[in-house]
Amino acid sequence: MTSIIDFNKLPTIASSEAKNGFAALLERVQYRAETVVITRSAKPAAVVLSVNEYARLLDAAPNPLKALEAHFDDMVARMQTPAAKAGVDALFAASPEDLSTAVVRDAKSGR
Image (cartoon, rainbow, N blue to C red; front, top):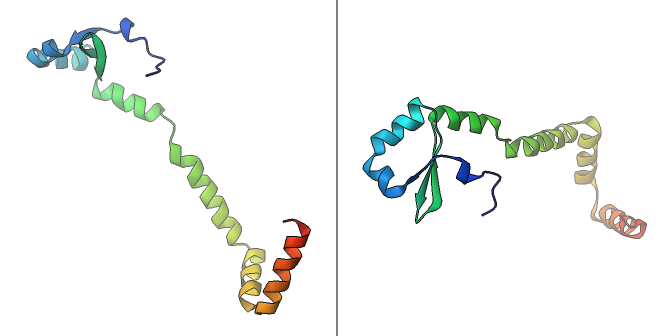
């Protein structure tokens, strides 16, 4: 696992200690605003953080769908132009021969 976080710099607690002292762990996280690493076999296994810190992290994270949504909205807007509507109307009004001619022409032009 590659990480930019140095878990050795954060407070740690063994999983058995976290289990036996869960109320104390919650107090550290909630009231002292600590982020605590829970270890298992001396290796980082989980991180416990406050709800406020979690919300802050979510707010700071980029929205992976935002760019896709903008691209989709742009495509829909382009499809709503008079020229695009005229192109669709012409396509549906074309005869099979007209379509065949257009395909051959486009193939020859390298499109």
